[in-house]
Image (cartoon, rainbow, N blue to C red):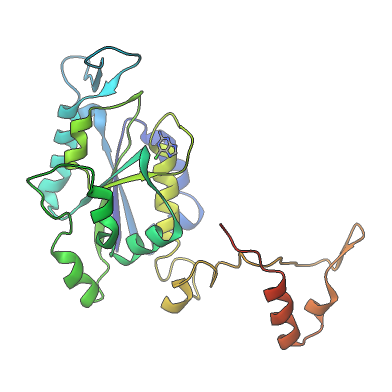
Length: 252
Ligand code: 6GU
């Protein structure tokens, strides 16, 4: 069971996706759990403010430390082993290998590099001791807290409570909600039993089980004059495998 707790001001943007299709099925089967924490509840003053202007001047508003720390600490009080993910355009660029490690509960193996630029004396190793034990016991049960920033940014001190900084690519989005959905989707589909029919070996490589490498066709044979390569109808499995290999393009 993998648990995601999403800290956000915009739950309504996330729920329709997580309550549909494969995400819904995975949650329904008990393979994953989605929880929400409303950051506004941790806001300050009568207006439940969560942001303020930057010291030194500049445009826009930044997420403040207090609401974020209080929200994260409220989750950690119940589960001290929960790991915090911050979607940010300056994070490590998300890839299939990272998704697989999160799905296997082995994300700690790359967290050192993510942490190399963050000073944190209280947490000399972000490797929660449980990780190695968990992977030895083959227990992938884990809890990820995704903190969705909004506005123009966040107070840098928030990084001291974050385990992983993740970027989705070299462009800028308005907030962490879409990245959170992409991170969750790419992890959940790798949990054994979510897609059905796969075994652990099938999720060992990007291509296996993903059918991304070669062109595929289904019925009809002839669609508006565009026909299916005949080798695929030949029943010759050797030739079919050869054709697929020749036509596979490596996903970048
Ligand atoms: Cl994780 N956040 C934001 N705001 N923009 C992004 C991103 C994340 N990844 C790419 N662009």
